[in-house]
Image 1 (cartoon, rainbow over the protein chains, first blue to last red):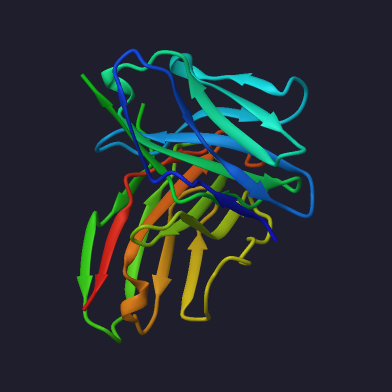
Image 2: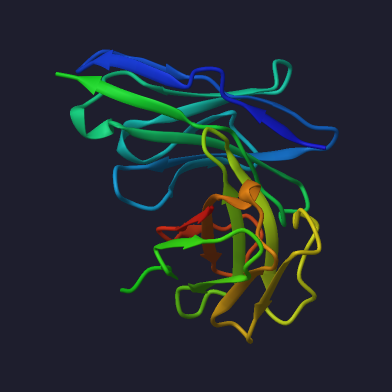
Length: 113
Length: 114
């Protein structure tokens, strides 16, 4: 079975400061990893994904994530956040069959002016 | 272009009643997913449709839950004899050809069972 843990339910950060949103997963098979973002009053949208290759993945809006197989982590980072980054961020995994997706409980990022 | 739409946006029902939730995917998307998000929890996979293949129903929590999809268009999620623990936001997503392609999510239906 697969599971995803996002330990930080809320992360406040000042504008232009760096941020890291943590994601750990457990799985008995190879997985693919995703970060989705939900802006206020909008549906979830894909931020970035890791399928294979380089463990450092770059996404939209200056976000990046690094896949660490030994630590079973896929933390999301941004070197300098903006007010517009305030949103709910969800980490997700999909086993290598690609049919099912397992999401974490989400991290609410609030950027403080 | 039009995104994924869901209706109704809110549904309040009494315990024991049946409800139907509707999802209109993006035109041309062969894959469609249903998820449930209870308060304070992550998205819970319910069911996956891909083209004309048999759906993956492995996430449905009980036989009170069922879903149908007509071809590659509208899908309906039905919950029979609703219980209070069914209260949640039900999200629908579609993707082009399924697999690891990006999923596009609808705004969700908030179901409240009294």
